[in-house]
Image (cartoon, rainbow, N blue to C red; front, top):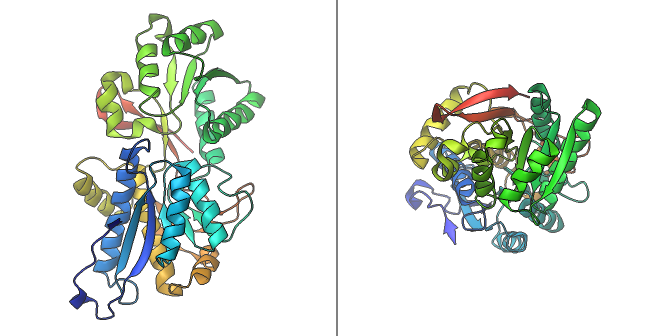
Length: 370
């Protein structure tokens, strides 16, 4: 069990805390660095809420569960958190894990504000219980496809692992690119080594390769193989799912990890709240915060606002999603019903295509804004 320490009881005469459950990947095979950033944002915001009086004089408490990128484990955590009496659950980074958590939250009547997972079909049927801050995959990945077209790419290979998330991404790219003269070439990573990927790229005359695969395996070996193949000196490597966002990418790949465009959900310029939070997150993480850390902070900001106005009744919390109007770190947050999306959706968080500057790996260059 991982709970955020509450301030001393003397400061909170009412005693009992308001509890929010947090789902975060903190161990492998989860993307641990993403989980660390998400948790940093969640915890920072809880501290800020408690520094400004908590929830009606009661401290806000985070009850954290590690999903380890396991949908079964996440669903079990939702059951446990519901029994523990949390008012709502928050978080998760991996789409297939968030989908399992959302299905369980919907079945139990437990409000779930999803921080970072983008799969369009987060639930099978429309639900009142789930809201989401991250832009849906179809929205972000269409912007990425527009970036590819604008950069002159028409023959685009996707090195894909088998999963609902990667299959959905491939379909979004194909549906958006095909009417505009683009071709998507599937490379099944169950059957191909990194060297075989290089051969296929040459054979197919691809000008771009998108990494729709896990990190660090097999993404890192694929990048190393392509970068080391003289035949592919001109090819663009892309990573729409954001693998290069985190410091681990640069630590593993060095210069080979530069100039690989990816999606991130930040505005071109942060406002005063965003600047303040960025400074605090940088101090907490001892590195530049990713967009995922901002998603975590915004999640608690929204939930605290709802809890202050609606109390801890779960049904009232869920009923309030369409009335949310909160200033987040990345702009004003409101939820609406969006065609093709089964949950209450912030439409939309800002979207950028960025890459790491070969001349300074710590610097991110904005290539395209959606």
